[in-house]
Length: 77
Image 1: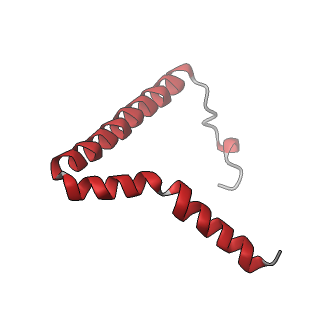
Image 2 (image 1 turned 60 degrees about the vertical axis):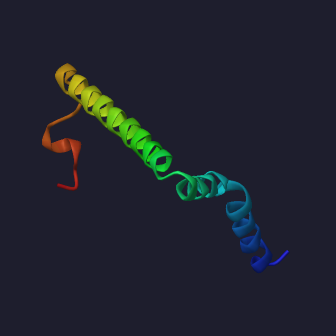
């Protein structure tokens, strides 16, 4: 086995297996613009909800005082 075959195997994996959902989205866009935008908005909404949840968890962690805030917490400073 040489390096060229190794990298061609990685390329095959991505092109033929892992990019299948993107191919579906690409063909969906050609069929229905509204459906493609709906999928985009769903992903955007999921990201927004995840961000709000993460910020809320950071707020709770800050209220509990779990983070070290003294100068020795980051010695490189």
